[in-house]
Amino acid sequence: MKHFFCILLVLAGLLASSPAQAQTPDGEFSVFSPITRYLSQGDVNSLSSWFAENMDVTVISSSRTCSKKQAREILRTFFNANTPRSFQVTHKASESNKKYLIGQLNAGGELFQVTIYATAAGGETYKIQQLNISRQTAVY
Image 1 (tube, one colour):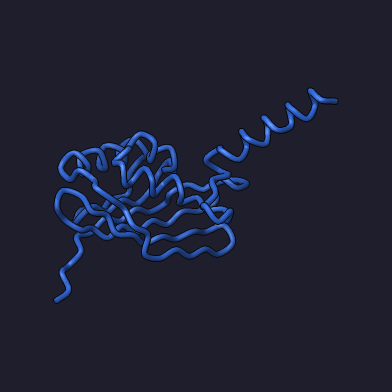
Image 2 (cartoon, one colour):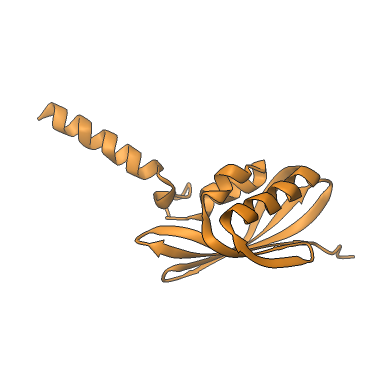
């Protein structure tokens, strides 16, 4: 019986740490917890694990629908030119199997607005369908 509880605790820990089960500090389910961390670190490889097989990507003024691999290379190019310093979420919303995030990325000495739209790809696994990075205009 003791071994059963040990195995149960290990399995619970594994499930809690999987990407599909990511949680915010307040315990609320959020697909954006790891995604925002990867954005702030410029970790394209980890971020791309959340990409849909085909997605819409807009970086500055260049928009396209592309494969997961192409999106990864577009973001790699962006992060190579704009080293991330921080990422701050400014707005989050969700509706059934859709999640939406707007945040501010401080990278390369500039501020960028990042918008992400993710949908459930099966069960509780969310995939990024749209990612938009645009320069923020200064407010005087």
